[in-house]
Image (cartoon, rainbow, N blue to C red):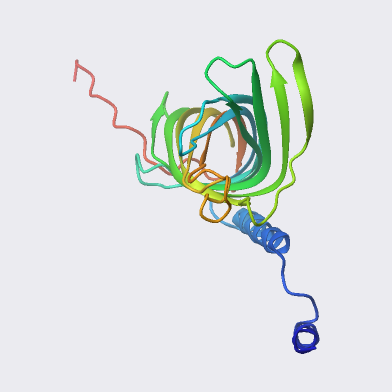
Length: 261
């Protein structure tokens, strides 16, 4: 009765039920999207873009198990980016994207059959991008150095044989007692972009190094490994639109003096 009164009081005061994890995520994504939209009122060095790619994933179990890289995971999302007018400092970038991750695990070395686990997540990476311009600032080469956080909203599993193909497949039942939905870690990479008027078209490679565990450790759920962070490799393309009418603010390189001067 006390719990019901407390819940009723909460709804009376705030007009809705307490937030669930999914509702918190939707609000976080909405705030991020609004921040990117607000960038349209700012200066020329702000960019909005879309991106898509393809990648593979793996897991690091402790105690160590026989695992392998699993490929075939698409990614797609939207990005906001700001370029600093200071030469070589580069840009900062925030993405909101849907990504796929996963791994495969063998019972023993050289086994014919492997267990595949795939997850679908909403991910928010935040990067610093130091860069160097080329071809009179018509192109640039850059690094990605950053962190990410993601929320796993769905998962599938299957058993696959090299000889006989897929033996079984279905939804993986994620449970709070044994699975973690939130993930975080470091991410980095490199890329190359070309400027065409107010557009930037780029290709890049990213590597995500997980710090959180996919499975709760064996102390919390017997039978689980002590550590199970996931890693990911992703190759992607993106197209960005520069807001505002101004050009690149970073000063051009100093031209070398003519030998005849």
